[in-house]
Length: 504
Image 1 (cartoon, rainbow, N blue to C red):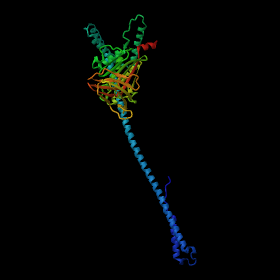
Image 2 (image 1 turned 135 degrees about the vertical axis):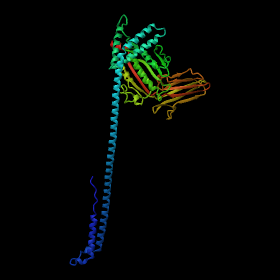
Image 3 (image 1 turned 60 degrees about the vertical axis):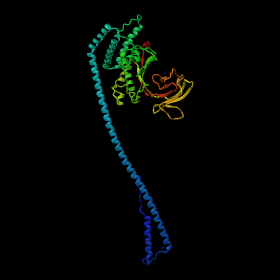
Image 4 (image 1 turned 45 degrees about the horizontal axis):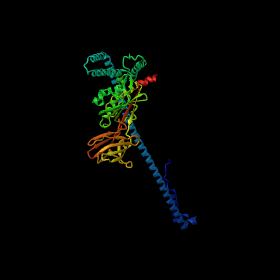
């Protein structure tokens, strides 16, 4: 930018000097006796004109001076603004440099801590592996002695003790298989090798005309058998889930913690203890989060389902709990990674790693899905004992992720639950969803009884509950939407029959 200049008032100065000289000559005519001043210079009219011209020159110089100083002032302000901006920029650069330096220090500290954790974890893992290997090596004789003693005890036991002894033998074998997994370098390959051995014996038995089973071990197991064994150590009451007897399919079993739905049962190839370990880790992971105070409620239990789809066993485990973030979805199966540690809990990062490795060994897959609350529109048809029929329309919407009731679609006001009072007991309730073909009908409602009725669309993950208080001459009905936000793990494995068909 070219610097602005402030010029000297030459025109008015020269004009003023000329006027002074002119006045001086007029005042001293004797100085020019030989040659007098020209006539125009002695005329008063011309002197006045010259004075007016001088005034104009002075005005012009003043205007030009003011304009130049204004331009200089503006330019000075621009320079000052640029200097201030330069200093601000330098201060900002200094602040950024300090911030980035702090970030770099924190990053170095973070990397150092993670590196130390990794080294420590590797050392602990190797230490654990060496211990497990040493225990397994030195425990062979003790294991054989214990198995021999249990076999003899089973032959000479009193009536009614066979099952107890058999459970002890199964538990000892389960411990031995866990030690096998803990000492192997590749869990998936170890599990797959056992399945290949079982596959060979299974195919031979299927192709054998005599039907004699000469296999040194049982090559197949039932999925319900593995599920029952996984539930035994963590179930409070065996009778509630009927774990003391064989499960039939289809059936449902539930207690205070679990809601189990069995649609089918299938034969699986391999070691059942490997599948028990997989199921145990999925259930324990779900149970941990479902029992946390912020996620626990009496209607949302750990939901387990077993089904058959496209030649595969489909095993699902759902729990109320924190959703798995996008940046964690590729890490949760890594050895040593635990989301509990991120959420200020304690986790070893082994459970889902075992699940993934065993699933790969069974040539299956394991995945997860974050469950969200749905919006819906419900129509309630309520029949009273006096013959009256009441109809209610209720919308279920989401407010900040939580389900809320909305009685009128044109009004934005929502409530946690909807309630209605009636002058007569309720004898039946019919609930219709907007997209459902068949309504849910609730009957056999008695006087002087309180009852709760869950959403029948998905018995494992109910979206709402109806609570009815029937009195002798009145009734109160409450509809409460349930918060079902959580995570559902889905594991799929080929069945023994599908493996046989694929080989054929």
